[in-house]
Structure formats: structure tokens, C-alpha cells
Image (tube, rainbow, N blue to C red; front, top):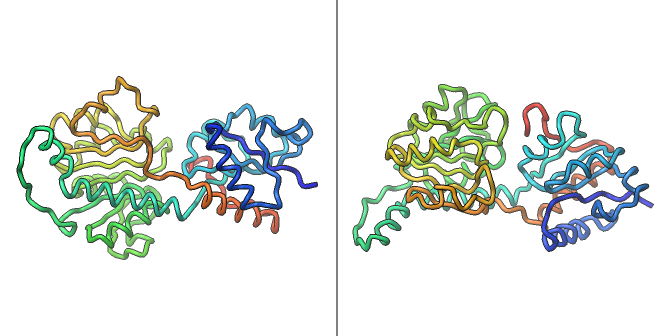
Length: 320
């Protein structure tokens, strides 16, 4: 009898049912059981856990754990909860997630390029006024981050006619590794300063690490091109909220589309809700698709069963 795979998470009941059904369909030869259904002997024998924001205390009760498969692309919370002594953590790298993220980045870039926030304000004021048209070719988009999600977004933006540049913490300056050869990349503090100062729209796609937490503070936001707009679909803690509000109030930043926040759901008392320069989204940009995620997980598990090699894992020191 094969040792069960543990399923651990803090999902709502209906969501857990959907994920377990998708995983069971993708892995018919495996036994996937929620932590609560595992016997003491099974908990001691479990080698693999599939997780979605698990309780660290439950993970600690799996002494034979060899590796963890996350159902999310972002793993900073998991890394922080489990600590440096954690077994290898494999993040979800799903092409469908990259596609939906790139789709959303393109949609919200068009939203800003076509002045939709301004037209919304005019509607509220009962004002009929046409604004000058700005073509994608005349709009420079700066991407912060050029991993799998950033490359997919860059491709879609270039295909739509936007001028695209990217800043990345780890890759050398030069051409982006994407199918869009016109995307220039830069690195370092000076590179970030240049990109912020040249971009009409800045899109944040960075992972949250010790180095990126608070990266867009008052100093960095002041480096933005006057009248620029910002899209954050990464993590809320990368942007200093008070500095963001100050930049909006001063008119230096024209608009911010925010899909992620340091505290979620966004508290009712947050001034972001009522600010005319902010569009708030309830963390919808890159939803995980249970069926495609299960297919990716199944591929990783089958490869492990066949070779005994753990899939490429998160660098715990870097946090992603």
C-alpha cells in the first residue's frame, strides 16, 4: 500500500473539495488525504505534502516529510512560517497562472493608458469631456521583476504595441529572456532609478523578500516620472502605503491599481478604499486554477516517483 500524500491548508471547505478532486483526478494512483484524516502511523510515514497556507504545527507533525509541494506561486509566507530548517519547498510554476497574470497586467495597463480613471471621475462629476488619445507606442511600461510571470506580461505588452523595459534584481543587464526581444532590462539601484523615471506605467511583479519589502518607499516613489501610474499585482508589503498616499495627494503619482495589500482583506478603515486615485481589486489578478495546478503537481510527483529527485525547490535564503 502506497504511503498517502498529506494535504494541508487553510482553505474553505468547498475550495478544499475542489482542489482535492482535481488532484485525485490527476493522480489516480496516489492516495491524497487531508491532515485530519491521517492516522498517527500515516503521519509518521508521509514523505510528501501538498499545501496551501498550512498550519506550521501540522507540518511539524510529519517527521518523515521529504519535500513540500505548494499550490501557490508565492511562497514567502510558507518560507517564513516553516523557517530555515524546512524540507525542500517546491512552488507552483503553472503556465496557466502566467497567462492569466499577463492577461490582467495587459488589461489594467490599457485601463490606465486609455485614461479610464479620469473618465470615471468625469462621470461622477457629470462632465462630458474627451481627453487626448495616447497610443501604446507612446506609452512606456516599466516592469519590476522578470521571472516567469514578468516574462509572460512583457510578451503580451509588447504584442499590444507598448514600449516595455524591465528591472530585475538577479539577471545581468541586457535583453530580456522572453519571446519579446525588444524588452530592455536593467539591474541595480541606478537601473531602478532610471526605469522609474522613464516609465509612464510601472507594474510590480516582484516576489516579497527581505530585499523587496518596502522597496517602493517615499524615496523611490519620488523617482517616478511625474504623472506616472502604478500597478501592483505582486505583494502589498513591497509598497509603503503612507508614501503611496502622499505621492497621490501631491499629484506626483496619477493613479494606482492595487490588487494586493499587506493585510487582506483590506480593512474597512483603510484610506485606500476612499481615495479617488486608487483602484482596489480583491486579489484577483492571478487566481490558481485547480485543474491546471493539479496537472503541474502531478507532473512533479510522477517525476519524483520515477527518479527519486526532488523538483527544483525554493532557495530559502532568497525566499523564492
